[in-house]
Image (cartoon, rainbow, N blue to C red):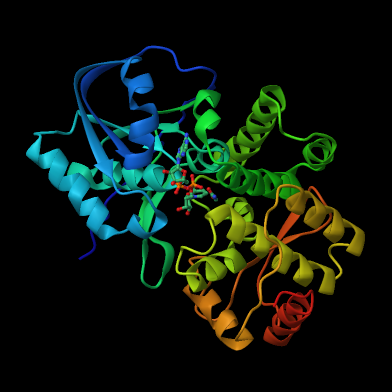
Length: 352
Ligand code: NAD
Ligand code: GLY
């Protein structure tokens, strides 16, 4: 006997992304604001002054990528249960990408899923992490290996929060902007080369351009069955760098910067990117003091670590390669020896 469950359905996950000073938010249910110690201290009053809800509970996490783990998720869930949250309650993710990814994941699994709102407070989370519904945590096997797609109900991007962001964190966000420009928008890249991102207006314009790119890619491929993987440019390499540094040596955006340069070495070896374009990308990253050099101690081990990446199949690794500035290719089945040679040529760039 065979019984079919018919589950064909159209789901409308559309939402608005507001890029403007935060206006009054009215929420007709209980709300848990999930944040961390740093953001709470700096900005919780600003948010509370603009929030009206049936009841508000602030859940405070430790600050740091090393807390992006299952223990933090369990503590969020305990907190929600102890405070009698239910399926109509909502979560506000209030912080950078770490808080955003964890809050979204908690929202995805609490009582099989509740609604959440993103209020990102770092540049990186404003231009990338808060948009698109990727939520999750790290495991000892690698970054973001546990998670769920769970779209927010809305994203509120307010440049007010960036005033307190340390320069190094700001620059890490610029790495993700450069990623969007190299992969999808040559004009945006040219514009980024022509500005300094020191004034509010140019930062705001850059945020808007990045979010526009991200939103259009996610709209085409919400669950990363195809083109969305291109947003992982620099990440296949960067995630290994991040893990080798125990998630402490480099910020995520810094590891992505290094990963972009590694990926570009491979693009150049395959004739997809010219030396001139490779050098323009490196110059732009370095303008924001982003690291571009890194010494790979054990290239074979580095290569093997790619297989822990979600984008890798059993026997093949997916590489996201810039093919000229402004376009991108998703390439499988590159010979191992070609990748190893590219990594050797990367090491030869000179990091000690
Ligand atoms: P983060 O969340 O660790 O924030 C960086 C630091 O800035 C933290 O110490 C934080 O407390 C502090 N901070 C936050 N807002 C601040 C403010 N306004 N003023 C002063 N300090 C502030 O790091 P991040 O760079 O925002 O995000 C990185 C994470 O995002 C990684 O875990 C990465 O995997 C994830 N990510 C997710 C996606 C996605 O699509 N879901 C995309 C890109 C990155
Ligand atoms: N940051 C990659 C993505 O959202 O797909």
